Image (cartoon, rainbow, N blue to C red; front, side):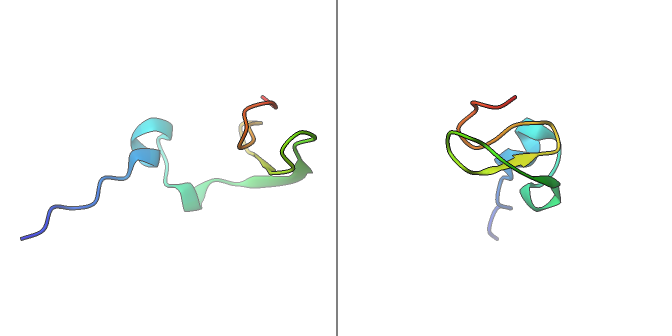
Length: 46
């Protein structure tokens, strides 16, 4: 029997990665989408 895969995103943030909602705004530094909490991939926005 295989162990279930650990979802670290859910452990850390309380929801699965695919459930995060993103705005149409982009980070001026890394150009990634900004999530529902105001964070981007590089952490410059927040």
